Every structure is written in C-alpha cells, then in structure tokens.
Length: 418
Image (cartoon, rainbow, N blue to C red):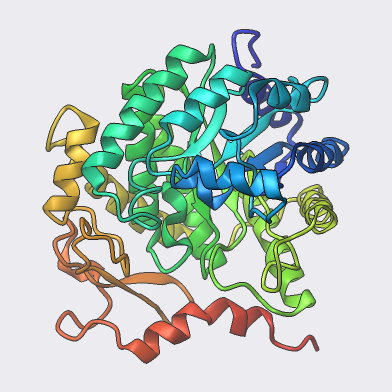
C-alpha cells in the first residue's frame, strides 16, 4: 500500500500499481527554463505520465562553464544544464508543477554526478538514475575505481540531502543492445545493492527491450523474483525501456516497436515504461513527438493483457540461473559492493560484450540465435558453465555478423506491412 512516509515518486508508482496502470515516461530535456517548464507542463497533462529532466552533454562531463556560455549566447544544448542555471530560477521552474501528482526524475548519464546530486537536493528533487558501472563503462573513459568512489559519495549525498532519495539503476540498458539478459539483470541488481549500501532505500531496476519477446518476458519474470530476493528490505520496482539500439526508420516500424515495448511491460507486471518516439532515428524528438509516444504506449498498455509466450519459461529458468551465478560470484568477493564490483570486472566475472572501456575484459561476446534471442557466443572468464555459450569459443563473432546484429531490429520492424 502507498505510504505517506515516501517520496512523490515512490507514492506515484505505488498508486499506479494499485490501479493496475503502467506509468509512462519520456526522455526530455531543453536548455532554457521556459522551454523545459513548457515541456514538463505538457507531459503533466498526460494521464499516468512522469516528468523527466534530461541533462546536456556538457553537464554530464562536468563542463559547467561551457553550458553557461551556451545559455548566455543562445548556442544550442542537447539537454538541460541543471548546475548552470541559478537555484532560484530552478525552484521557480518547478513551482506549482512538481508534486505527488507529477513527480520528476533527473536523467544525466554522468560517471561523476556529485554536483548534479547536490543541485537536485538543493532544489527539492530526489529522483534520478544511473550507476557506477552503467554510467561509466558505456559512456566514459573514467577508471571504474573513480566512478565507484564518485557514486558512493553521490548516493550518500542524496540519502542525506533528501528525505526519500530514489535511484534507478541503468544496468539493464548497458550499451543499449547485444548484451544477454543475465548480464543486464546482474549489473542492475548489484548497482541497486550498492545504492542501498550508501543509504538509498528506494530503487528501480531497468531492463531494455531486446530482440526476442519471449526472452524478454522470461528475463522480466526472473528480474522480479531476484529483486524480491536480493532487495526485499527496501522499496523497488521495474522499468522497461523501449529498444535502445538502432531504431526503425519507418513510422510503421517505430510504432510497432513502441507498442510491443508497452505490451511487454504490461504483460510482465512492470510498473514503468521509458518510451522512445517515431522520430527517434531522424532527430531529437520534440514535445509533440514525446506526447504522441506517451499516448501510443498508454493506449497499448490499457488494452487486455497479452498472453505470455509459452517459450518464455525456458528463458526464465536459464536467465534466473545465470543471473544468480553472476551476482553471487561478485557478492562472494567482498562485503563492500564497490570493492566487489571492481574485483568482479578485474577478474572477468563481469564482462560487457563489445564494451571498449579499459576496465572491461572484453572477452565475452554475444550472438542472436535462430529464434531471435540474445545468447552468449564466448564466455571469457564469466562464472557460467561452458554449455551456456552458443558460439565458437575460438573465433568469436565476425565484424559482418556484428553489423547484422546491430541492425536486426531495424530489418525486422521496417519490413513492409502486408
């Protein structure tokens, strides 16, 4: 049941869950205060929608002066520079808008988010996302050690600076594609336990729609069971992302993919969906693009629940077992989650396929099998049985195979309608 001793965000999620309503959320960020306010107001008029403030790329790397210079001379920014705007202007932007009826999440992509977290707390925002692995390995050259230290400090600052801090692990979206579900689930769960270690008592676990509906259904069933096991003493929920890889170019392909992501979230009992738009492959989406995507996802989720594919059971059992093995192997390394994560990557017990970060072993690879499911091609040092790899352990994956896999969903969803 919803509790008064919770944040706007958590209470909003709990109430929607009680109604059986999927919460839908865009990824939206505009540079100036009036545009950001107008975008939030437009989303607030959508039933069951959450607000998002997505930050710009200068702020993500700590270059606040460049962001400020762009604001002063009118140069374009690809998001909202929350650290560079004055505090009173930020408070005014949120006044009368941010509430238990319209929570707002700050999305940032930052490996060292201390200043962002402090600014959030100063303006009264308490909900964000990312993680020491998921916002370091894919997006940054920062050594993992420094990201772990920065995220420990940031989590503590958010826990101490707000009454009800919430962090969504981005672990379920590593590189956006071509990562078997068990690694996505393992990193998300480990990051959530890391947040808990630093005082965060409300978390969400992400999962990016993959290449097989049946596999995704099995993965989300496994994630919910594992979250109850590893995170049963704190509040948690699951958020699905519309496919994060190369997006369909046609409007009908994009629509079909967005609708499928909403039906996936609905069928598996997930609480929240981060939607993409039909304009995703062409341009930065407008407010109108986002509103249309929210409408489409909400309408799809409001229909009668789709039956689970019977094939999901086999994937569920496999992913549950693999994820437990990955998580427990890391937990056995050290009681401190930060140290355990560092040692896990150093030993290759965690290894993100096709990730070029210096602290990633880079020995595990992926393939898409004949059923459209993501499978391990080579295991490297992962603590999994050798029969879990479906590929050739000696030769791995060729460049032409990788290119084909990257465009698998485009080729599938952009097929002409008959």
